[in-house]
Length: 260
Image 1 (cartoon, one colour):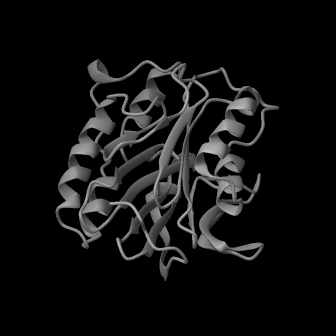
Image 2 (cartoon, helix red, strand yellow; image 1 turned 90 degrees about the vertical axis):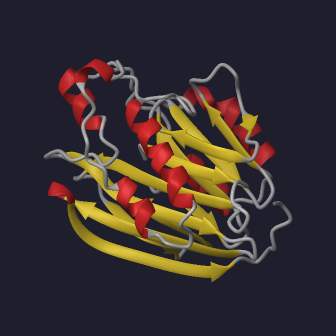
């Protein structure tokens, strides 16, 4: 997952809105969002190589999402799978606070990551590349790409502004998918330096990433309404940005919201 835009307790009718793009190599096998046969309370896509996921929600209003922290050649091939950080929270019963405390103990065993975990009342963020440790999000709008939370990369700044405008159009989904489909490449003078070649900095600077072997595989809109209705709408893409599927699932959560 390379881009997450999130409104937490910032809309009078929707305590949680998430718009996200997952970028990955096209050869990595993945399953579209669905309720998991081995954990039927969980609605999420699935990485069929390592078994984890990048974003999901449960019937108990547990939410988690992840991005990798881009650091060029600094990847350890034997590190734990980061997708398990999302999956383990969704299928578990620990509070967000207890879970993030456990993650902090093992954080060095993973390559760089950013992680959101939350329930009906609390939403936390942590990164094993952030010396500030975990933090609890106050009501507001947040953006995350492949650096730390709210790092003002050009694509994140433009997408966050479009996301804030799209919130005013709810319950329409089209404005969110429009912003997630933005393929504008940032001028070289505004590109971040993240340890990858310039050609890749250009490719990855777009909100919707498109290249021969790597690109945006899924665009997801997750909405949790104040009455507990949860909707996950996902569009999947293959090589050449070809649409290959669409999923839209709604369910009434098993807990009523106490926040907002």
